[in-house]
Image (cartoon, rainbow, N blue to C red; front, top):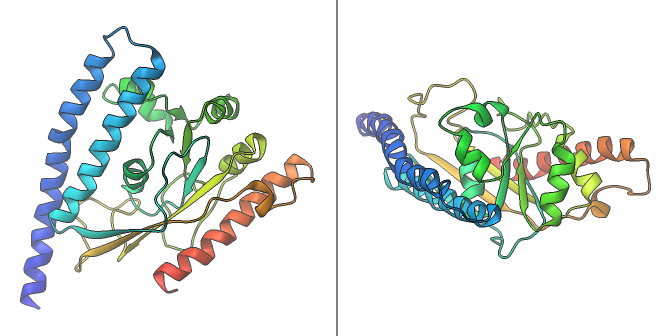
Length: 258
């Protein structure tokens, strides 16, 4: 029991270290991004370079957390390669879910909270990476243009972190884009056991035992596999939202053993 307590305390310290190192580690890519903004490169070239830098940083960070003993993570299923024009969706259970997707899926355009588009520290990277604000009134048409151009779009149908694994309160945003664009869907299942970095939890609130994170890539889905595409669009939105929720309920239950 004493050893477990010591390990628990170490992981609290390690969490603090990882946050500090992430800030320091983000400085160089961040500086690179700001310098990149000054060069007269084509927007699509800048975007690709920025996304590559973000991907490397995310991979470094999750590997760092594993090295420090904060968690163990495993990646299951076929990792995507040469993915183009796909919607990438995931359940949203912890603060760092997006880092896992960004680390393993290339050319990823994120749908981000509007605050990140106006924050002085994140505004330029978000703009150069070509990310989309979640409250943009033209988000569907912009998403379609990006998907048609071969970019992949990451969106969390829940919109925010859930409070428990099987909550999965899916909104219609992801389904609206999928129906209108008819883009293939790559589902990612993310589970953290025991749960950590949940909504409203401070960073130092670490589980007494090390968390195990499972990132599972599922086979790509087409719209016609999920719903009847001959129905009116408004009905397709609702049907797809519920279909995806039931799909995730089944998959998450298998992972967490619920």
